[in-house]
Length: 433
Image 1: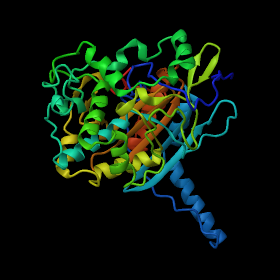
Image 2: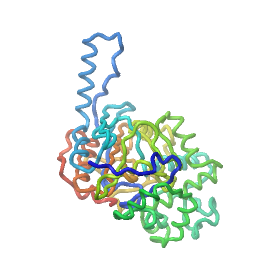
Image 3: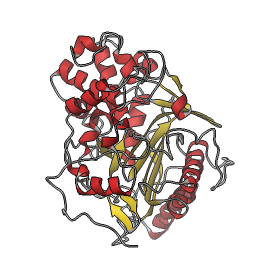
Image 4: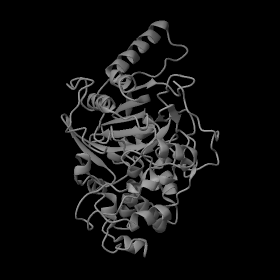
């Protein structure tokens, strides 16, 4: 398979990104796919050098049993039957990892096996981090969810007096999504080539993104509907800056990343590379896959700028729903959800609730060119499930949707899940396209 490479090398001083398919930082195949975590036995840590051969053998057998208990078959199907070059998954129970695996390759040239500990772009899962910071500021009395946007960002939003912070967080503001502007996504081979050559390196400051959003025609009056809009979260990021005097990235790092020791989680600003081990992302062109790993992620800002691992995401989810980041009252507000018909789900404050056959799961999905992410689990915080898959941008298909659905239902509902690989369920796979 021939890989089309960018002639500008590593792109260390280059710029930008945009989502092409549904024009949001949420992936089509997983916008409805949903997941919790698999119930399995925790594999023991690696044996000490002094352990006997029998002990080592027993531990290896236990590890293999735990691996077999996880959705490894479904993970491989994402690569074999879908359009993904790599897929990474992890499940956790009661704060411990019970299963982790990887399928596919790190890149199409070397074809080295993908690493389960690899980093990836998390897209809209960033929103959950940002919303958590806002709820912490509410807890501290520094703002209120029903504050009008105008109070914190005077003159920025034309009808800011009628839009509350809560409406930004749950996407009921009606504000136009700047990613609906055709300048910010690629939709055919010609626009993809332009993006690869120039667009991916462009800087997009928050003021630019907000300007596009507030000049666009609103979808409905504030509070009178639901429409996913990344403009909402760029505004939220600016509110955090105004209230704290620090960037939203700094506040997320100070309040969440460092206290939880999420050492592989970063919010890179305009830096185009993914630090540490990672699988490459690709887009489809007639002449072959084009490497789309290097992008300037400023187009995501507080709506989708993050990089993480399945381990860090699972630990974040466990801390959030386990009460380590928010009080019970604030978590109740965060999980007070409104109908979100665009995605066949319910949306809280930076959280999505999906209803599966085995019960509801909470979290978020995310997507940027070449990378799709799922982070979900039950509301009691006892289990978490994280998935990253490097779907070929522009090549998403029903096979990918079906493979994701089978993986998610197995991860969320366990081995008793009855959905076979290759089957589909329109009630679950009718979301963001």
